[in-house]
Length: 353
Image 1 (cartoon, rainbow, N blue to C red):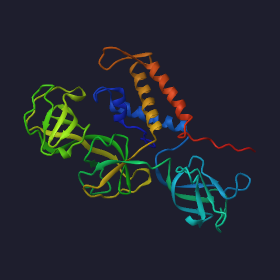
Image 2 (image 1 turned 90 degrees about the horizontal axis):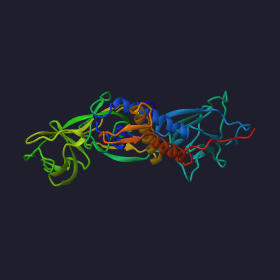
Image 3 (image 1 turned 180 degrees about the vertical axis):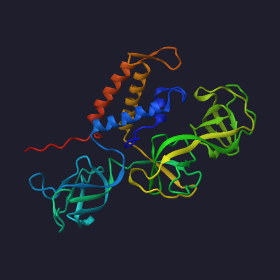
Image 4 (image 1 turned 120 degrees about the vertical axis):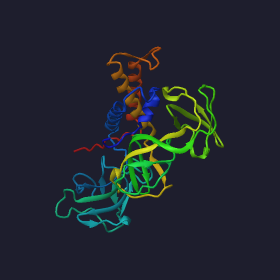
């Protein structure tokens, strides 16, 4: 996944209005990877939070004010350790700037009322080392919890309680560890259909043992049929039948499955893999809204162009009409210009010589 995606596989599929069988997952993944890198190029910025150490040259008076260290693309969200010329710079001796609008912080300034100063040490090259969380922002949203403990630091299968809160491509966090979701598959919810469900479109009341175990918007699998949860009242789920292009079927005592088994890359973005208890809360990193929207639009343009053989129009999924690829591309280009002129795009620092 390179340096990470800014939207999920499910986001793109939903925007296209296609069933999960309509396009190959690998095709969507390639489009999302290309789209995310394109967004970074437009914005000249790295968005995902990464815990690491970055090195900067000593800011000599010829290139900058001697107390000001420009970070350029290495913007920081928070700093845990800074050394200059091999000497630790105490947190009380520097400011992350701009203080009133960051993060992200695009420069670090030593305080003029404190004794510390940037030092070159034996060489000005890579004289300053900054350890911290780099990126744009570390905004997060709740993403359910673990439905089973993570008992090792090498396990790549994680079961969660809410399949609607996490998508393929998301960066999720459990404790101090971050994990990248690379796939989703079905997990047995441990419940079955409690009363007969007929093979009729208007039979939408699905009785379960515990309605609290499900979420609105969750897509459940009953045998070969998928249903989407529209509402929950006690232990009764109101569902939309034959979801995602599947066929209606009758059910009673049928096991209920949900896409809650995640395949993950452990210890992502510089974090360390760790064990976790069942029920541990999860969060997911939230990219800026414009960034996510542009990533989806760019991926859509790629997929529609491929489907049309790079022609001007493409047939709809239902085969009842056509869709203008050119129109979608024009809208994407307009959105790209909007993003480039917004605050999420980094303004290149210019210096006169």
